[in-house]
Amino acid sequence: MSKKFLIIGGAALIVLLLVVGSFSIGMFVGNEIGDSESTQTSTSAAISTSTNLLKETVEDLLQTSPPQATSTPPELEDLFAPFWQSWDLVHELYIDQPVDEELMMQGAIRGMMESLGDQHSSYMDPDQYRQQNMPLEGSYEGIGAWVDATREYLTIVSPMPGSPAEKAGLLPGDQIIAIDGEDMTGIDGNLAIRKVLGPAGTEVTLTVYREGEGEPFDVTLERAKIIVPALEYEMLDEDIAYIKLYNFSKMSVTEMKAALEDLLAQEPAGLILDLRNNPGGTRASAVEITSQFIDEGVIMYQEYGDGSRDTFESVNGGLAADIPLVVLINEGSASGSEILAGAVQDYDRGIVVGMVSFGKGSVQNWVPLTNDQGLVRVTIARWLTPNERTIHEVGVVPDYEIDLTQEDFENELDPQLDKAIELLINP
Picture 1 (tube, rainbow, N blue to C red):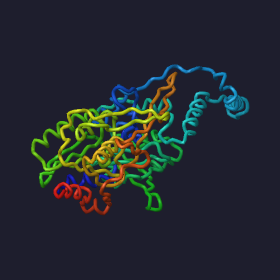
Picture 2 (picture 1 turned 135 degrees about the vertical axis):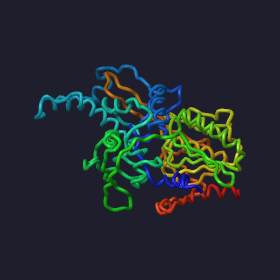
Picture 3 (picture 1 turned 90 degrees about the vertical axis):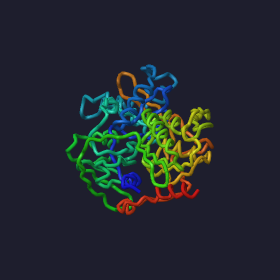
Picture 4 (picture 1 turned 30 degrees about the horizontal axis):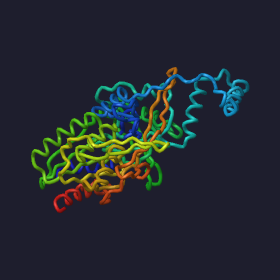
């Protein structure tokens, strides 16, 4: 087994920081990163292939909302009376005048979204919105990691091989509680991301809380130029084809088809699809890539609060619908990865190996607000597997649950990959 694949397999234990946000971890943020007929935007992008994710979601998925009423509707006047009373009291009594009414308004929106108790429903002020959607040039400079910006602290989710974060030994689940000595308590995750990014060659010190480690500890990393591929593939020993998919994007679909054509021409005995630390991407890409392995039937359902649902079926013409298949997942596999792994399980199409996945199964709309006042992200639905299993906060449980420890990684061992090869050689 080549060291290349040991590193890829061990990537479950190391991480890299992404550019403008989490894949909602976005991990497949559902409609938030939806199909081309939708009109929403994503929470994140990693350069190269991930730059395309941002462009796709900005260009194809942005949902605008009609102008809203500028006065309190009559039926809500009693409900909002305490709000306007508080507004007036601040103007009349607060010691430091004049108050910033725009910040007060933004704070009210932020508080309203937080009151929902949903980590994926939130408010982004105009500055955060502009930073989130700034143009990218195919690369970015930082430490290289997919992160979850929706939790109390910026949390590492999944790694990029060769990144500064990987070399520093950061792990999935690590919480960044301070950046360069600045406490991140109460700081929006997207703002924390901006503090981690910086010119290549400069240093950033992260204070990390790791479950089971007791006291937080500092990690100093040197930022670098980060480039993220869509996928990598190779023939392993025993005529086993291997594909490592980093995310789900339009580029990923194109590269997946090309990889499958090349690999299948070599007549492999089986195929390993490695989705470990793959945080997801667009819904359309998730459905289309899954369709390469499941060529008919429902791939996923999207269910709304009123009980109605949309059904997304396989796109005909899958290239690898018959080859023996093993899918690798771990704690960093989310949304699009979970859609694919869940469908593979429900159809008995292949075997899932690894650790329980992240559990991102909700769908968000990103709606820009009037007067250039940022946007709100609202959870509108949850998605289900073909057998109507929910994944949100549950994850996909592998058929063979096998851990990959830090000790395994340090010794260049990958028991998850080894098990996948074993299952294909001795079905």
